[in-house]
Amino acid sequence: MPYLARTGDVPQAERRDYWQHVVSDAFVPLEVSFPRADGAFDGLLRGATMGALSICDVDTGAHAARRTPKLVTTSPAGCYKLGLMVRGSGVLCQDGREAALAPGEFAVYDTDRPYTLAFTEASRLLVLIFPRAMLGLPPDRIARVTATTLSGQHGLGALLGPFLLGIGGLLGEVDDRSGVRLAGNVVDLVATTLADRLELTVADSDGGRHALFLRITSFIEVRLGDADLGPGDIAAAHHISTRYLHKLFHAEGTTVSTWIRERRLERCGRDLRDPLQNARPVSAIGTRWGYADAAHFSRIFKAAFGTSPREYRHGQAVCARRQDRDSPLA
Image 1 (cartoon, rainbow, N blue to C red):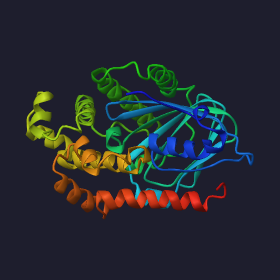
Image 2 (cartoon, rainbow, N blue to C red):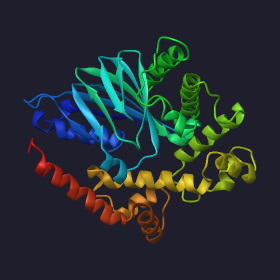
Image 3 (cartoon, helix red, strand yellow):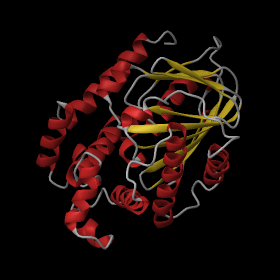
Image 4 (cartoon, rainbow, N blue to C red):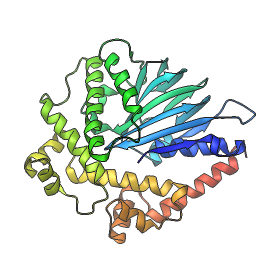
């Protein structure tokens, strides 16, 4: 479903808090700061999900968004982000590097390591976010190019930039089935571009096998809410044996069940952090993402997050109130 949020819909005094909620909900939890002392700020975010890929078109005033070590620890996401500067300028900092981004340039960053993305002027940024395993490239090698400026004018980057802009123009117009296929194509092109920068081949030398893995993970993403989703159904839908399915995931350093569980819990955690869903029962959130048994959902969530879903939601609300109380804007 397409997503639209704009500060013009809320009073000026509430826009900064609103924008922090918007970007934290669309991406990962972030701390946001603003340079203007008078509190003025304007921002608009359009987004949509295509299979396992989320894409957002962000039109924003000057501000900085920080993924702090504490937020990484309390809200891991296991994703990569790619930011393509469309208008204005920005600086991305991660892993001791700084990437200054001008229009047509892009950079990759990891949500599970601290980073800062700062805009000193009104800017427009196209952002992709997707699970790290979808990229099919060694994480230690990707860490070498995070927060480095990649040109959209030369080589494969010259193909990637216009392609992403075209995808951004289709937000909300692509149905689920087409979106799953398109997500695989997008991430595959990103992987090929980064592999070229790293002088690597895609992790799996068999391009068909890599493409199949992308299709399968996108298929899973669309069906996370199906409590009966399992290896047999996934394999049958892709006309392969369950043995081969397990082999594909083993090559990525994970298992089918682990992949499904982590993605479901990530979605549950995101909903529990969302103040707009405070009225929704915890059990309903579990059911939405494939956990029909409330007791089982509570056990598996606590094993992953160290606290029950109800306590996790309460803790997030307490933290939010404390931040509001301690904020210099309060």
